[in-house]
Amino acid sequence: MSNTPYFLNAKRNGDHQIIVSLNNRIKEVTQITTDANPIEFVDRIIKDYNYYTQQL
Image 1 (cartoon, rainbow, N blue to C red):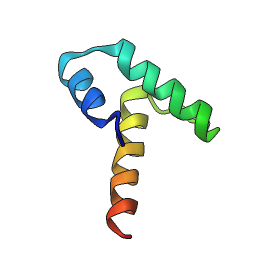
Image 2 (image 1 turned 90 degrees about the horizontal axis):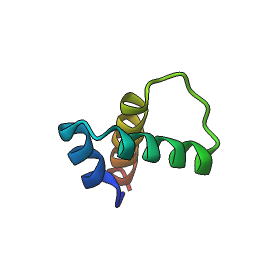
Image 3 (image 1 turned 60 degrees about the horizontal axis):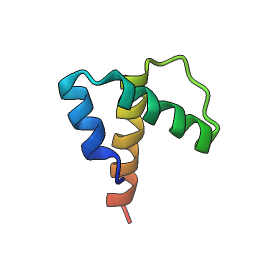
Image 4 (image 1 turned 90 degrees about the vertical axis):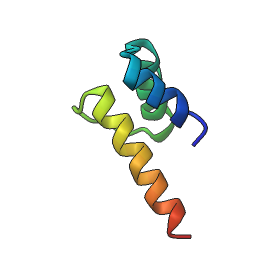
């Protein structure tokens, strides 16, 4: 996932604009609805993505 480094840097630096942008884009593309906060949601998506791609 090409946005992973951006997310990790944003998470470390508290750059909420990048996190919210990723959150919104993921929701738009996947049509997922959730009440999770943006950091938790994006983190879960990245972890799930990494898990499933390693299983291939």
